[in-house]
Amino acid sequence: MGRVDKQNIIRLWDESAILYHQYALKYPLYRKTSEKLVQLANLNRKEEVIELGCGTGITTKMIAEKVKKVIAIDQSKKAIEIAKKYVNKPNVTFICDDIFNVSGIKAKKVLSNICVSPVFSEKSNRIKNFLKKGGEIYFSLPNQFFKRRRKKLWVDEVRRYLKEFGYEMPRRGDAILTLPLIEEKLGLKIEKIAELKIRRTKEDLIEFFKIPVFRRHSFGNIPEEIICKAFKKTKIKTFTSTIYFFRGRR
Image (cartoon, rainbow, N blue to C red; front, side, top):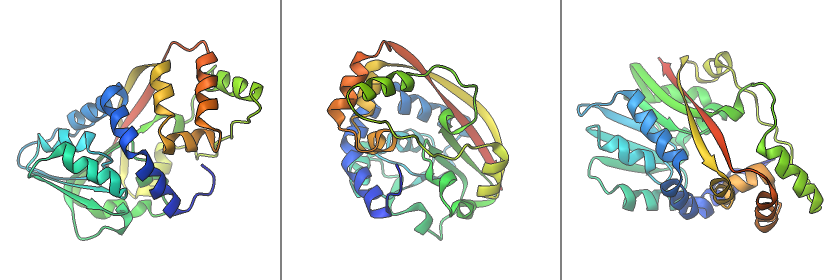
């Protein structure tokens, strides 16, 4: 995304909330990763759980059906408005704030589904403050943030067509994660506990990158119509996204 200040990030998420929610309900990525995360956490009706980066409540609703109470946190006001209507359960409390500004609450289990802030922030070591003694955090991240063998990807084909249209796709500077690095940043003992492969389509990708925050992250300021035009020219039919799941223990 380049250097984007905090207010711009919040604005992007607010602009993205409605499209993100519609996308998440229609396509499998967030629904399936939410189901997997809840399953891995082995939740029960006696538990109180904290969710970090709850977005529009896709994962929150699944958690709420399994536990006594959920405290769900997100910095996007618009996302929280949608989540309250979508979840609509008495055992859920929503907090609209940056997760690193929230204090005074702890749980035995903390969940975070495909939210990169807990790992990539300079304040990541504060995440352990949400955990009670002996507590666990369960979280998921896309494999794009981890080292892997280089092979031909859909992004290479899209980049080529964007060049034909006179646009240069930015090279992302995301850090490459490893387990030791995540452990160091969070100050917790981390283990990879599962991975989930999700089959997706060209239509899925096009709709995903209509969401402002994700489009900006991958394509910078390239216009949406140019990105869609490039995707439509590709030979992509289906592809696989791999999501890694982790457990951290205090």
